[in-house]
Length: 93
Image 1 (cartoon, rainbow, N blue to C red):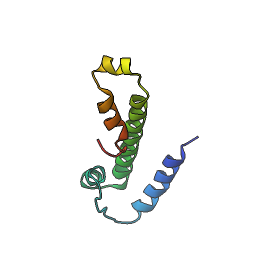
Image 2: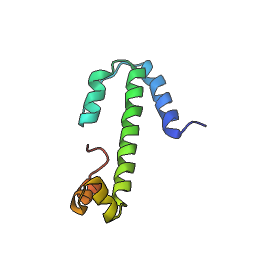
Image 3: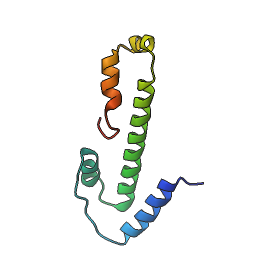
């Protein structure tokens, strides 16, 4: 079973294949997409990669927020650094 996002992107790719379009960048991630991807299938691949990066980043930050103080010391972070990183939105590197 395909995930809903892949069904949406597949349908979107079919529609975009029939049309010419341009993306107006509104964030660094999207700006990179518009400059690298000239074909709809390349753009779709880059969008999926961006979404997966955002999902991993959000999961990593959630895991970091749940670490105990002694585990933080193992990785060389203070609680202040952990809190600062965990509060960042997923789209911010």
